[in-house]
Length: 294
Ligand code: GLU
Image (cartoon, rainbow, N blue to C red):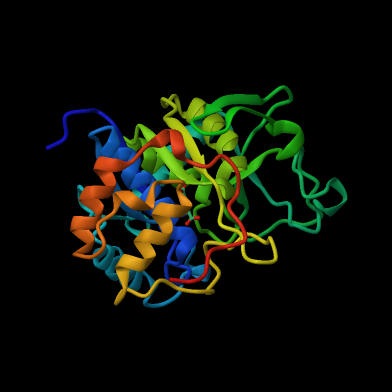
């Protein structure tokens, strides 16, 4: 039973099988939640149908189950949550904080893809909806691992999309609405999302929502120093051999391999891992070259 208000989550997009990069985020967020005696929830971010791979949701959930990483509450699927996203969008539109935009990528090419005002050359059947980001929208926050982070969202990002011109919800809106709706207090995820966090904080402020704590784990790099993208199919985790994958992720999180039992079930390994986990050992920089596949 949970005795602390800490609530973390793991939120994979079903763009392919889970791989060691995803497991780092899954295990890291799970360990930090257990360390805080909090809860850990799984959310399927299937909000982008063009990028959703058929069968990937079931495959990811089966892999998590094989690894012994079980959600402490019902698993949320973003594709079932249109009404919540629409409510948030309607509020922003009514408050004048969001606006319809007909600009295409090519309209914005001259501005480096950054939207500060509409320059659409023609109307679209269905415009995108963007959050208005006024000059001076600099967001600062303290990352649990990396310390002080600051971004001038106006200059570096501009007005960003909340609902796409193809009608699908943007990740930024869905993640902010769901982190709040699920009562997430601590977002622990890969460093590839570090530059999304200031946008999410701006959106929380526009919606009058509290900002959770953020901690961005280092990325696994491949042997050429490129990031092992979470959606890359390279080295998918093998659910038939969960222990080597868990050990590899444990070591990549800077933890003492000696803490873990030599054999046994994933549940036994995770119990030892949560008892021996030391957040002070988490690496602050990207990890590479990647360790050999488990
Ligand atoms: N669904 C995102 C991904 O798989 C992660 C979102 C998040 O953790 O905020 O990259």
